[in-house]
Image (cartoon, rainbow over all chains, first blue to last red; front, side, top):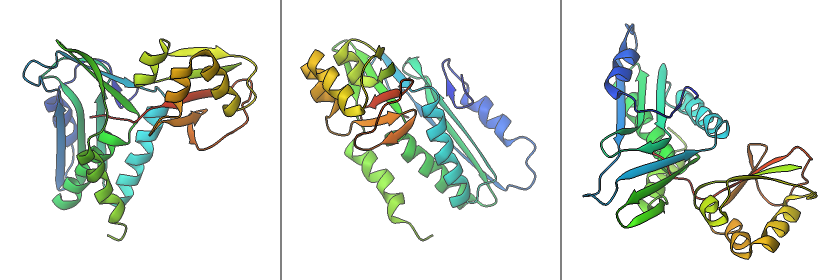
Amino acid sequence: MSEVLCDVCFDPGALLSAFCQGRSEVGAVASFTGIARAEAGGTTILELEAYPGFTDAEIGKIAAEARSRFNLDDMMIRHRVGRIAPGDPIVFVATAAKHRRAAFEACDYLMDYLKSRAPFWKKEHGPAGARWIEPRDQDHADIARWDKETTR
Amino acid sequence: MARVLLFGPLRDLAGWRERQVEGCASIAALRALLAAEDARLGAALSGPGVQVALDQAIIKGDRPLAATAEVAFLPPMSGG
């Protein structure tokens, strides 16, 4: 497994603690944790598929873009693959910057990218069977916000 | 011999995730071969939002295929 992809459950609190350690100059750390929803019993397992090598490389590109766009000092991205139980974390993003606005915005940007443009495929398994999930219109609208903001 | 990879719903539709394909000199020839074997898969490979990666880089349109090429068909992506 790569730095980003992870095929076992992770502890977002431990990741955040480790990410915050030893920083005396960054000033701001923001983080986001995405958690698998049970959908009132409709989802028993969420299955996440990646394209090993390609998925890592694509996320690496967007991480580099976020780093320069928001002038980040550092960031961390963890994304589950495999079979995920409701309540377990799927994704964790942390960003470190001099000031809070950049940290918040970079976190938001990275999550919008991960939802609809990163090479992952997501299948919900439940009592009614299994179905592949495509990005919602809202996910496309969310990432499009950043395309418009070309001059920051 | 090109290595062909399917992801997400394409993998379920085809019933395979990965296979080796011989004798295809281009992406178009590969599409034609897969469509001749399985018309539903052939249609799905050109479905809305399906992208093609050649040797792990997204491409548009047709390309020649080297003997060692890796071709992946990528349906709409959804993470997080």
